[in-house]
Amino acid sequence: MTKLTILSAALLTAVSATTALAEVESLDPIKLTTHDWTGQIITTTIMGEVLKKAGYNVEYVQADYIAQFAGLKTGDLHVAMEIWETTGREAMDDATNSGNVVNMGSTGMDAVEEWWYPAYMEKVCPGLPDWKALNDCAAEFATPETAPMGRYLGGPVTWGGFDDERVEALEMDFEVVHAGTDAALFAELESAYQREAPIVLWIYSPHWATAKYDGKFVQFPPYSAECYSDPSVGMNPDAAYDCGKPTGPIWKVAWTGVADKWPGAADAIKAFDIDNDAMGTLVGRVDLDGESIDAVVADWMANNEANWSSWIK
Image (tube, rainbow, N blue to C red; front, side, top):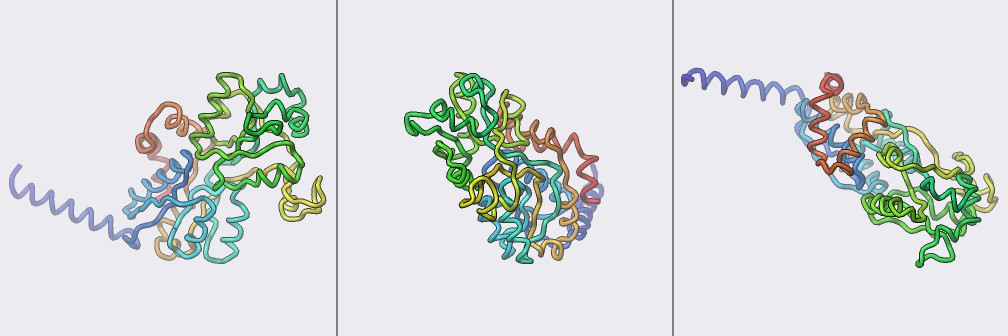
């Protein structure tokens, strides 16, 4: 290769890079929050990598699921890719009502989060999945630490979900024990399932667990917004949360300044879309098959370019 050719190639590369950078509105980092479960990190990494393809500067910031809204309101954080209707609606509504946070639409995924038990537990507690059967069978779910109360294994405390309040409101003979991490939650399920040991725990979907394990969600009294906000509504006239959890979309939210500072990025975030089945498969590849999140995301990007490239047109 001649010196002239090398120089020409270098100039072309520099011009292309300058053009790409000129197309984005600001090179300040767009801060995307990550949390403590695999699916959310995958969702966020896909979005971040797509934004990078468009020339944006992206920064991933570890943040608490509920507490992150303080940073989103002030603009210290910019984008949260998974706010679940099941557990994050109240915090999201409070943030959007402030005028400083905007709902960027659904991710395309629908959320279910609820108490769940393996199918083999119906042998010792035949009234399931009716929640009232749990009280009749509480001793079957007890551990040495909770006996004679049954044990419900909840998610990490930071996930919210009002399980402690639900147990109290429905006068259930259960003690809520919170798993320290997402990984610990499913490790305990795997251990119990292999031994057919008693367990009832928090399971969520989209996730690989509902496909891998045979079981059912507990059927609580139907959710209503009033059940959460008005103690007089529901089975217990003196307590709120005497019903099941809501279901619904998994939302994307952003600091309102994102649309002003990075309008192209805001459009891409709004356009992001993936379904439950696709996400469950990606999470399984990480949690079950041991692949890295970066490798799984890179593979998804390579095989879905026609999809994600439309987000940044």
